[in-house]
Image (cartoon, rainbow, N blue to C red; front, top):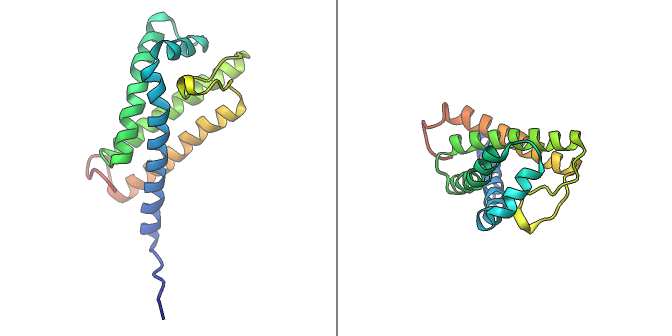
Length: 157
């Protein structure tokens, strides 16, 4: 008779964090590549939100895709997981605030979330996706923090 081994709570928690890490990592990498490859189209999306001036908008369009890419690589690779999840939280807050602002202003603009791959117009489903990224990132960070202590104590789960 074959016995089925039931994972302990911490094992299940680690598996869930791993799943979140891989999912968020893939999402950030997939979202960053078109922005990196077509920076002017992403710059147009950034300006469309009417949230920044020209200089800050250019800075966001140049730096944000590389941060997304780096965070994605760290999450998938298990490198600096605590810091990568913390940056994921920061980006989740940023995305939530900017999309909320655009919806509040009634802007009918492309999300820019996945660069030129998507012509998705911002909507409440876009906002729900941003809030979901935030919630999942916070939950994974809290789990890592509970298991590992302060970020940097250990690099990966």
